[in-house]
Image (tube, rainbow over all chains, first blue to last red; front, side, top):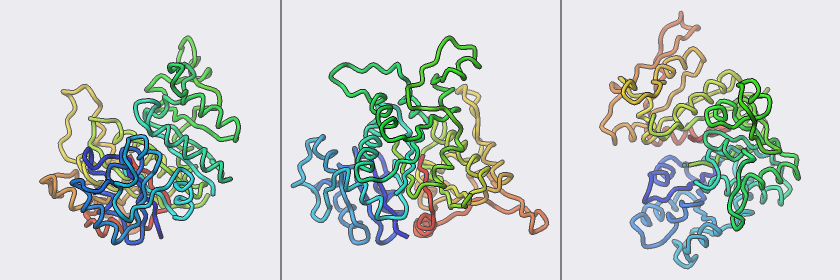
Length: 102
Length: 130
Length: 134
């Protein structure tokens, strides 16, 4: 089975992203939304953890939440794909289950 | 795809309700079905019609009500969570001896079984919260 | 009605927020619908099932005894992530001894708590149909 995980918390505030990465299986997808988008940025204390996770999982970030926070797509970690809400819907349709990390 | 959505936070304090709304709109746009939206924890506060944000702000309650009407979405407020937080429909207000109700159009109050049933019936269960 | 695998993921401590209590209320309803219910305790969620909770001093109801009743509702799969427990300096002995009675085995009491590694828990998550997070 394949799961879409969503993470909506900044990795600087809570352990949602690290817990998600620890407990997601190979081949799963992780979508960063709301304050979770800060986890997608390059050059932070958490970037190495996220880059490491990309060996096993595909990581996406919600563009409208990046833009709202003034985070440029240019500064997103290489390999993370930016999607909009319709991309979010497509991801849920592509996976059997969704799991939220709040 | 048939979706069941759970919203665990009220409007304005957390983004959860806004994100859930935007997701539902995008899913409907893509011709998917939103079978049910279940409001739990502080999420029940999305369903009071006494929500009056400033004119330059979005009215989240009205947006939910509009969406429910346009797409025939079953929007359920959890009764136990609602009673704790003062969200009432007319029947419940009468039963509790209160002087009025505050539930918004398109919302109904029911039990947690509706959440489980949503999970059983839908192809995809999503949770928006804090 | 179809039977699905429902997983309730608890990642928050009790009392500071309402999530633990209201999650437990959903679990009981899920069991009443005769679904295949599991619970996971991850991160601060492990504090929900610690022994010796006493709420007299904070004016809130101590709902920890409800976890002991889960076995009676045939909720017998409580997964605790070992890494989360260890990170908090806790062991199994710090958790409530939660059990269920196996009617197929002369009502023998069996432990409901399953201490699992992150890797094992990931496999359990992977088998679920519906995941509700609190």
